[in-house]
Length: 301
Image 1 (cartoon, rainbow, N blue to C red):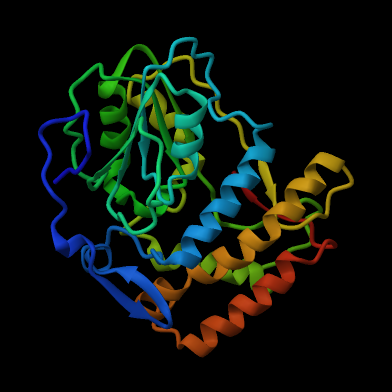
Image 2: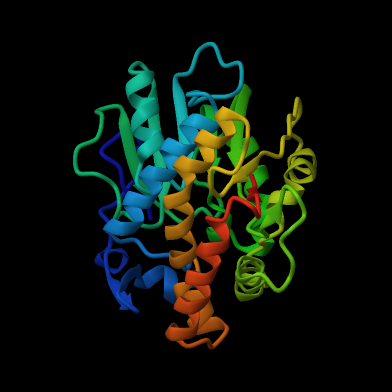
């Protein structure tokens, strides 16, 4: 099932089943994704707002670069899991002669007004890609790990390689949600570490929360080359003495506080059996830890 205005002519209208939502503890989730274990995060306005904050954080992290590889002629771009379309819109406007195709299972967060060269499609990236081989100059995959089935990762990378043109590039950003401390002060008893452990426990088996640690191996196994892998400590608040890192941490604080809540609501209550009161209490305490500059907390990005 795919939808677009153009440029692909093998598309159909969006089935209303993909628009259906279900409200769980005051947040709206896509019913199809919940029922089929595609992802466990809200698709409401609050989530879209958070993704915009996250996008602006990444602007600082990556020094304003939307595209990382040394691409000189970008005509066809694929954004996998475009979400609220923040990156897709910015790259469409920055490269007006390009065609940007965005794929997501949820159409709920896409803004009404988008650039004319951005073409959103509805599809499940856990399924084999239906794009023709050698189609795209650049493929972007960012923060979609919570929506990729555990067994899908190897074929996901192979599908990406297949749709790239010869000489094309893929850029991928994922977050490992096991919190770390720059000074080693976070222990297993800290609420933030307990949140991390429960998050990994809540999605493990269906998803692979440790996949971000294996990206280089996955890329190599898929036959991709010229691989550059880098781990960036994403500060959860402005604890660093370095001005740039402190700016990142300060910008990321609201994003993290909202993420700790939205990532936990469904899997903690429905998969771990926690009460929403216990979830809220843990999230509140984890947010206190995340905002404590003495703990120097970060997520590996």
